[in-house]
Length: 246
Image (cartoon, rainbow, N blue to C red; front, side, top):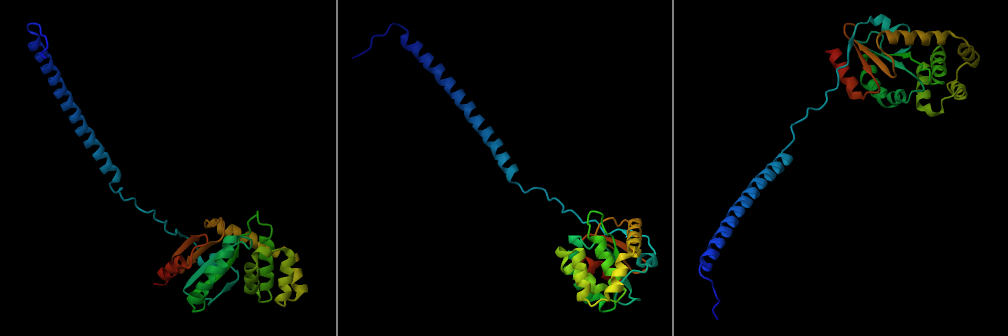
């Protein structure tokens, strides 16, 4: 059945359809262009986000600082092990209650002793820095020094650090007996204040070279002296020792 049409209706309808079609074409083109632009932007973001980050340099550990110090002043008259005329000297400031000093004594010092002290290359000196918040640090220092008067300094030193968690005045007396010390001489020494004064002098000397924490070290060949801070691994000491030997 044919539809009824008024005159001119077909041409008007065709014109309307043409306008609508053109609008659709333009809209579609704009939409497609938007997709392309959005896709390009998205692709750029993906590339940017997945691009390898710029290399960030690893932090470089600061070099152990060189200090100006007389070797005689550094060594003073404190206990040492090794050859007196060894080419390199290490001076340690220690606190007998400091856990990091304990770590150095039990983990690092044995390697230094085996490779350098026992072979005549290093003289190792021990000075005291009894921190005020460690109540058993000064008694430990006095015990070691008083044992030293009976040629048992390093034996007491090793006993204290090997049993550091048990450090107390009672334990120090027990260890003095284990070492076979003359107790009357040992007790008289501990009861005196001479090693209180010695510990104070050690601390003041260390502070003058920037040693304010434990363990603290100065390593020297008599011409060049460097400060080392903290419980460093053996490899760090080895590097500094070898540099001063060469």
